[in-house]
Each structure stands twice: as C-alpha cells, then as structure tokens.
Length: 372
Image (cartoon, rainbow, N blue to C red; front, side):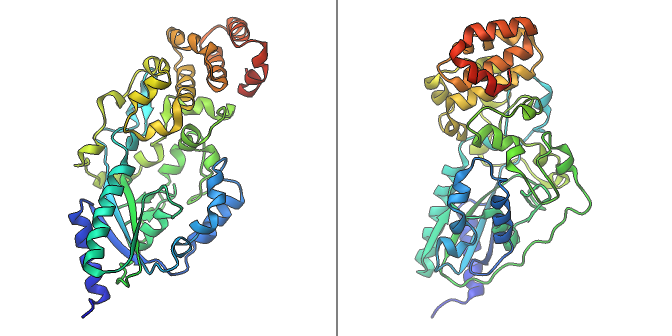
C-alpha cells in the first residue's frame, strides 16, 4: 500500500532533520511561478554582469522541471550558520581583511552535498521514488523555492530571510518524482524596513527586491575577473571576499542563534587576517592557506587584486611594504591593482614615477585599465 502525500511529506521532513539539517520544507516543483519572469528580466537587462553561465543556463534555470521534467516535488533544506560576532565590526579595522561569514569556515558545498545525498538515499529507500539533489552550483533557483516552501521569504535585498535564523541559512534542494503534500509559502515580513537597501556601500539595489550584480561587492570580489571598476574601489573598503552588510543589518537576525555546526565555525586565520600577510601569498601559498575553503576557487591573482584594493583603502603608508613587490608581479591584474594601491598610499608624484618604472611601458594599457 502506497503512502499518502501527507505521510510522505512528514517522513521526508523527519529524514532531513535526521541527516543533520536544521530546517526542511516541501513545495511543488511542477507549478508555474513568477520567479521565471524575474530571472529573465534580470538577465535581459544585463544585471548578471560577466556571469555568462547565467545566460547560458537560463532555460534550465527558469523552473525546476526544466532541470528534470519528471520532478513533482521539491524538498528545501536549510542549515544555519549564524556568526558569533557582528560581521560589520571588522570594517573599522582597515589593516585587516573582511571575509564574508559564509567563507570563514569549511566549504559549505561539500558538507551540504554529503548530507543531501544521505538524506536522499534514505528517502529513496523508503519511498522508492526517484530523487536528485542540488547545492547552488547547479542551475536551480534555491531562494524562490525556499520562499515557496515556507522556509523564509526573499527580502528587499533578494536574499532569503527566516523568522528563526535571520539571514544566516545555507540552502540545499532535493527534487523528487514523488507527490508530497506542500507546505504553505512564507509571507513577506519586511514591512517598511529598508535597512538592507540603505547600508549597501555601492548602491547595488535599483529598487526593493531588485539587485544589480554589477554593483555588488560580492560579485566584484568573487565573480568579476578583471580590474575592479574605479567607481567601486573605495566603497569596497577592506572587504576582500564577499560582503555581509545587507545581511548583517537585518532586524530578523535578533532571532538567529550562533551556529552549532562546527564546520562553519570560523578558522582562526580567517578572522581578520592582516592584509600585509595575505598580499605576500604566491600561488602555492594561496592554495595551501585556503585549502578546504570556498575562497580557493577564485584563484590567487583575483584574491590578491582584492587585497591590494583593501591596502589602497587602508590610508596607512606603512603598508606600502606589501604593495611595492607586487608592482613586478607576473600577473597584469595584480600589477595594475598594485599601481592603484600605490597611488592611494604614496605621494602622487612618487606613485606615478614608481608605477611607470615598475610596470614598464609595456603595461601602459594595464595602468589605463586601472585609471592610474
């Protein structure tokens, strides 16, 4: 005798919690939704910037059944990663690097994928229904699914907000051909608050519930591969990987707890590391330092580019000792960032003189790219 949709839904939630997730909700995967139109508009207006994969995978991303035609239900799971300290405090310490909370511990992709597979296997063994699991490396819109499932709602900053966990919730999805009784969607509880919009240093939100990734510091420091546009460099401050500003100011964080997941506890060396030390990393040193971290995926050159922007914003000429050697770096991206940092920290005449001498005439186009 087959189990009812309600019984299966109850069982799937229980199995998700047993697998180590803190939240689990169910929604239909085969219904039309307005997230498709929002994504098409986002990409159509070019707000995805240089993330070409968003355009390339658009037709598979617009709805879950475009990924898997047989999918009937989606189980959205959450794992909280609430920080112990206010992530905005480090922005005052200009000689230290601000790293996004989610990247200070172990790579969440690995942990969530492992638990998702365990959870999905257990559900398949009980239900015999086909399943597929996804973490955010696949073309699936987790946040709209999470809101539709009742796990939270997409706030004015477009990120998920939970009444129990605030802004600090990693997501994973299991699609299944099984018919599961869905949970009710969560309603929007942002009200008139606009703290997340007003705090953004680069004004990345054209309107509430809209984001222009091209202006977002998370995009600029992680996804963008070239020189950081001049208009955003000063606003980056000491943020070298991601940005937590719009998440950290959300009033719903008062209900969040410090994560109990030890894998997400920050590594000591990633809590305000000195910019000078990070600037000195070569490729091998970078890979060793960030082993097991999501930071590793952007590569040493992009990472050091970000560190040099932070050094240039530090206002401390004593940090020039970390900048000068990088004027002769093998990477044109790093050399250009070093010239810009030098122009911020040194006397303008000396900066131009040293930059021209170190970068060489062959790097004239690099200096032009960086606006120095």
